[in-house]
Length: 383
Image (cartoon, rainbow, N blue to C red):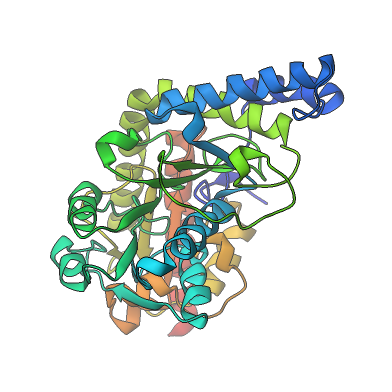
């Protein structure tokens, strides 16, 4: 390996030192928050403090915070749990064509059980047209609308508040997968006007295996993991106290540093985009011109297979991806790329470069040079 440039932060980030510091005492001495003795009460106090911290960042009440085993679980609890809780009111769900597989597969489960699912398309820039959601709504039948806040593959932001207003007017619950956005967007749930919002700690320099579902007070949900009364009866199982403490610490830090992070990372993202465009002619930047998350850059390399590109970059020390890490191993183009209608010569060669709090200008410049060298070598081999 000639370099060590990590540009796959949208897949996962590493836990920052402050997060590990918050977790360590609980790994060796954390007790069960449901126990009534002194050890249990101390654990409960830690859990309550973490819940309060997360609630403050989201502009929510502590009672509205549910800790889960990750973002995917939070999405499934929201979608399947809300749909089943309101099955008597209607069995129609709306989502978009570019959602994370946790959302799409949850909708598949509902569809297999008799729900009707509308998957609204997106434009070439990856944006959902609120009018398309409005046209798909069936007043008296649509009980849930799930549209992500920011796309995890191309970074496109959705007009969520406008969509939520339409959905609420039709009597639907609104869920958003905000997993890709923490640390980069204001996640005040009242401003977003959502009923359910999912996050995952490892996307914002927290630990893996722990997530959050914001569930607005009064939103009906059916628990998907049963066996106990933990998390307001919505998620059975002894809480991952160390993970939850780490999540809360990471979220508070990410939110406090958000303004500086957005400015710095967006500048680096633009530097990377400009460098690749100038050094590798004919590339296509997906979502360019649309409102986007500052840390994600999706680029199509014409005529090049993404798997060969990734292997070649990895051998030279650049870690990137071809889309969601949850779909790793698939040799088919990303469903997000397909939904955008990207031209065939680009569709099989789309890579995602995602920056993070540790990315430097040196990393970006080094990556540009390596991308130029790798793509040039592959193009020459094709001649």
